[in-house]
Structures are given as structure tokens and as C-alpha cells.
Image (cartoon, rainbow, N blue to C red):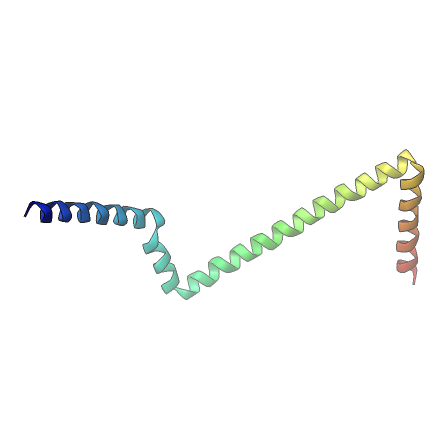
Length: 98
């Protein structure tokens, strides 16, 4: 009888812990979201737009920084780097001209 009570109390504690963990995971909200397909599609669409916008802005900023750095290196007129950048500029101008 005593062993059974101890076992039941142990199971109750584990069940309470499992219930608390499931609440922390917000499992009910996740299942609710899976049941509402339109809401799930809307959330995924908005997150995709936000990611695309973030990538575009990030690439623009990094590209601008790279161009600024290359212009700065060209102004320094370092022989090896300056010649390399001049070659790149010639290649780009040839491609754009034809």
C-alpha cells in the first residue's frame, strides 16, 4: 500500500512537470495555428516578406560599404591594389558599353 502511494505521488509529480513543460512550449497555440491554414499562410508570407526586405537592405548596405572601401583604396593609389581596381573598372565599362 505504501509503495503504491509513493508511486502514485511520483507519477503525479511527473505529470505536473510534463503539463508545465507543455505550457511553456505553447503546444496548444502551435496546434491551433496548424489547424488554421489561412493564418499559418499569412504568418509565413509576412515573415518571408520581412526576410526578403532584410536581405535586400543588408546587401545594399554591404555593397555600398564595399564600393566605398574600393574608392578609398583607389584614392590611396597603392600600386598593386590600384592597378587591380583599375582593371576591374575597365572590364565593367567594356561590358556596359557593349
